[in-house]
Image (cartoon, rainbow, N blue to C red):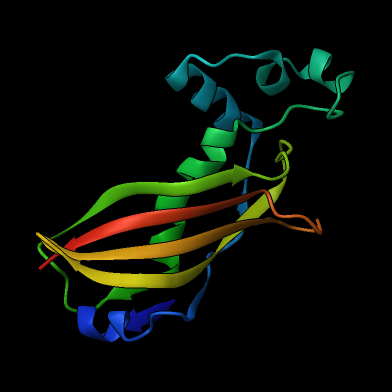
Length: 151
């Protein structure tokens, strides 16, 4: 966990890798819950028997499930001691699903602060997220996330 006194100190870290989240096991239960929440019950995610004989040798997480984990990972990597009035998920640029995440795999997020600029209502931060799969050479996901920090 990297702790910054305030937003100015975080902005000064532009260009730096901020660290890694904890490892998280992507369980079949979380995949099934995500399928129920989104209505995406494609067999590669939820049908264990059919998926075992399919192209991935078992069920895999939805790409959007892996993407949604960024919200859980960020607070494990960095925080501000002096909290702003709010921080808003402002969106994403360039998201790529690079490799499937199998049920039972462990993933973590590496985060780099790539840009910080003043916006109308606060400071717009751009983070490069790289979600790794434990024991795999290729990453699962690469995404550029935007956060608006309102003082």
